[in-house]
Length: 549
Image (tube, rainbow, N blue to C red; front, side):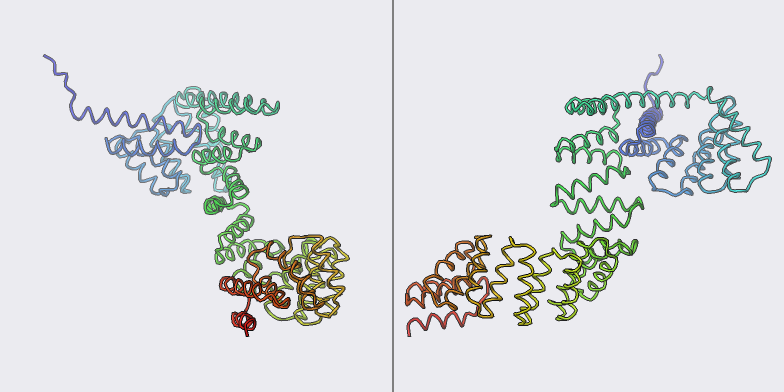
């Protein structure tokens, strides 16, 4: 009776063969489609195959090639794996080919030639691949001027003989056919989808790309196509998901990373950490580093991460010191970090570079504000503001800041003139009239002040400061508390947390001898001031006491 039971050793071999076959399949898919999941799967199965049967030569050199590709081992490590494989099967052609290839990467062309020579001798009529590899080694020697005439002749011999013998290399032909079949299928669905896109038949195009993905598993291409199409159709969320899937199957695709970063930054600003990760991944490509650091700087500013923002902008500026925008952003980051002297330096550099008069005027405005509000250097501030006005005479914001600086210096005449200049530039700007009204009030030009505040309110009735200040002119300037009440109430209606308006309304009722309402509004002022801290509690309490003395 024959024993049909399977031995444990047979089970181990069968399991190892199955694992190796799965590894080959994933490895082959990776070579055809270049998708990361296939690479990871192949590595996993090769490792499992070695664990199941450490005597299987093929697993070692194939695993070495994939680990080297992922950067998980060095070339020396890959050569060690080949040595292990050759110790198990000294005449294994593929092991010698891989060993020769790794020797080439190591720059040891003599050893590589030896390995390919052995592979050629052991292959017979199927020696096309080692011959072509040998020609590549010889070509590298010729290119590096380390060759002789004999090497040139050998190069031509191995190149032509390898090219002629490729028709007998069954594994290469088989792989070529698979590449060809896959490429034809991919091209068919890609062309069909693009045709539908040109016809503006977007649902049909999406369906074509989806079927292409299903039939070919070429996610790195079709997910990207579907992402672009969804973005064109304004389906931003779907587009982002497709690009994320494209990134999963092909993490080294720079174009996909750029789109992920851009879509996130533009449409999903709340995903700032995710966007930063994408830009950091882009840094690994070593391309357009200054632009990437520039974007990272803005993202860090959005996170209020001042240290990293300064660092990112500084790296961008170091890579391209003549870029005015990098200098400007670095200066702004220094302001956020309260490093004002550094900010001044880079603002000055941005102004010197002056790519555009209007843009440079805005930089002058920022620099003038530092001189005025931080450094107290009014002379430098005035010169910088005026430089900005020369660059862009229509920049009302600079004129308002210059007028504010004159007000802070109590140079009311210059302030009035500057505000009037701003009104001449933009007669529809409510803020300029409000500021002019305040300056006119300070000079006791009451009628002119009232006209200016009324004009400001006419242009923007919801500007609570103009409402309040007009009330003050009527109350304290004209002596008409009854007229002032309307404007104080308007200011409170617009901004229920406007502490000063409550206080002024209390004063108006006090002038009208309505003690109850005056007390009510002073008490409301006192309560609100605990939150806003705009006024002196002592002064408010004193007003309340005066009502009942």
